[in-house]
Amino acid sequence: MKALVLTGGMPQAHLVRELKRRGISSLLADRNKNAPAVEFADKFFPISALDVSSIRHLAITEQVDFVISVCADQMLLVAAQVCQELGLPCYIDYKTAKNVSNKEHMKRIFAENGIPTANYCVCSSFDPKLIKNLSYPLVVKPVDTYSSKGVIKVYNREGLEKALLNALKISRTGTAIIEEFTKGDEVSVDIYVEEGKINILCIRSLDKIPGTNGFVINRGRYPAKLTDVIVEKIQNTAQKIAEAFHLKNTPMLIQLLVDGDDISVVEFSARTGGGIKYRLIPKVTGFDVVKAVLDLTLGHKPSLKINHYDGYIIDEFLYCYPGVLNHVIGLDELSHSGVIDHYEQYKFKGYEFGSISSSGDRLAYFSIEARNLEELERLQIIAGQTVKAISDTGKDLIRHDIIRFVPY
Image (tube, rainbow, N blue to C red):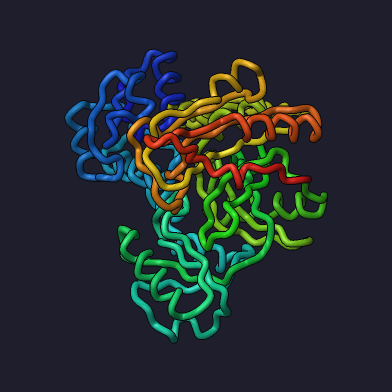
């Protein structure tokens, strides 16, 4: 068998290794020849995983048995479209993939089914009449991007027009969402839907880079500290989402805000979380969602057995001041000494950092595990003080000011 894998990040590298373990050849499509999954794939094609026509042509030419994507909204849409057109297996149909990857369709279905979310409007140009019933501050976001690209909080008309123009440029459909800003603590909820019933795998708190109008995540904390009332509301809302979008057997990711006893859904997708979730979820549950997606694609039923982890985990994402990277020090030392459990580096010598606008601007991440909060804080302080990103002028570029312990 042959599989065409879309995009080549670390989660996809995990998928390619699993394909190889099962005796399935892997073809990888990614514009980046240095993507992590490239070294594991049987064949590499330097094309955009978002280019539907090129992916379709490649799938036909190479006579692949299926096209697959994990941990990425827009690639899921491409995989579902190509598979449907070519009659190849996919765990999700194209219509559903479109609804869960396009914020315009998503918000409409939320509204139609009473799923709590911010008031909003959809636009392809600035029209004051569209926002007459919305109150500042507002949040502008392209309907079809990921990694917080183009998502900006604005406080007045001038800021709105500027942010909207940028969002429309980024959007491949030239469309954006304007919604009311909802206060609250953000949490990320990973779920597996089995025969239409939701099973919560992991709930963690997300911290954003402070002092900006963007929404770039710089830390994940597991587990999220939530009341029984909130957990029940999350369960009920997740089940309502699964039913509203006709999800039967699929992973699901929900990002939502918690304010007191209220929740508001920011967005969701029928996929597992990106970034480091491919490692985190098996660690805290014993259930590998990437392998489950492959099972579903091959027509097998995943074995859903959940064993929850008894401890605390911080995933710290490292960002930098502007400058050109020469080398990183401290990560190997921290790993060998056991201060951090794992790390991944995304940027290397010669990379030029600018302003921070999305999660794609991360230098690296490290993960810390501890059995109690005191130990967690101690290890985070050591890690934050040790790691450095040295520029070509000898300056440490890392934003140490945002590496801090957040009390539960």
